[in-house]
Length: 254
Image 1 (cartoon, helix red, strand yellow):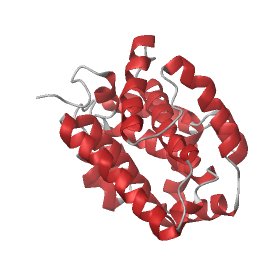
Image 2 (cartoon, rainbow, N blue to C red):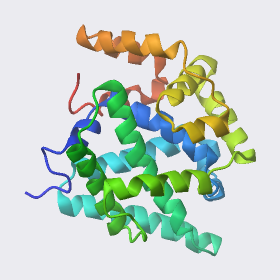
Image 3 (cartoon, rainbow, N blue to C red):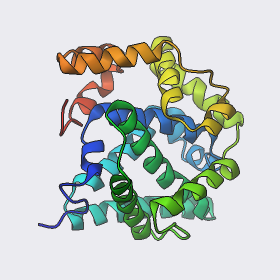
Image 4 (cartoon, rainbow, N blue to C red):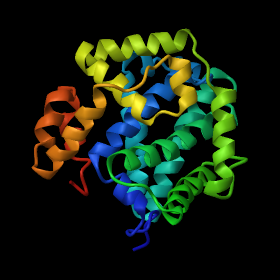
C-alpha cells in the first residue's frame, strides 16, 4: 500500500504527537489572526463563532493527509479545495493565491518550530522531507509559485510574513474570541505558548513580550513526559471538549 507520506518520514513523527500538534495550533492561531485574508474566514461566520474548532479542523485535515494512504490523502486534499471553491462561489470572487500559500507556509513553519522546541533540531535532510510533503500537498491543491526546495522557501516565507500580515480589527476580535472560548487561564497559556514558536515579525505585530513563566513550565512538562505526568498536565490545561480528540492524536506517545 502506498502512503502519501512515507512511514519513515519525520513528518509522521511530528504529526504523530499531540504535544507537537498543540504548539502548531498555538502558533497558527496567532498568525491566522494577523493574516490580511482573515476576512474570508469571517465570511462564513465559522471562525468568530468557534475559533478553536475552526483551527482544529485545519490541523486535523493536515494530519489526516499525513497518515492516510495516497488515494485517501489526495481525496482529502481535493475535499479541502472543493470546500474553498464553494466559499469563493458564494462570495463572488476568488481567495487570493497568496492566502492559500500562507496557510501552507504556516503548517510548514510551525511543524518545524514545534518539533524543535519539544524534541530536537531537524537535520537538513529532515527539513527537506518536511517541505516536500507540504509542497506535494500544495501542488495537488493547484497552488502556484511554490518554491521547489526548503532552502528556496525560507526567503519566500519571510517575504510573505512582511507582505501578508497586519494587525487589524479582526486580530483584536479573534483574540477576544480566543479568551472567551478558552477562559482567562488557558488564554494566558495560549499566549505564552505562542511566544515560543512564532517568528519575530509575528511577535512584534502582536506586541508579545518575551516568554517568561512558560519556559520553566515547558521544562517541567518535558520532565513530566519521562515520568508519565504529561497526561495529567494536559488534562488540567486543555478545554474539556477537546481532551478526547487531542488524546487520540498520539500515534507516537512520549
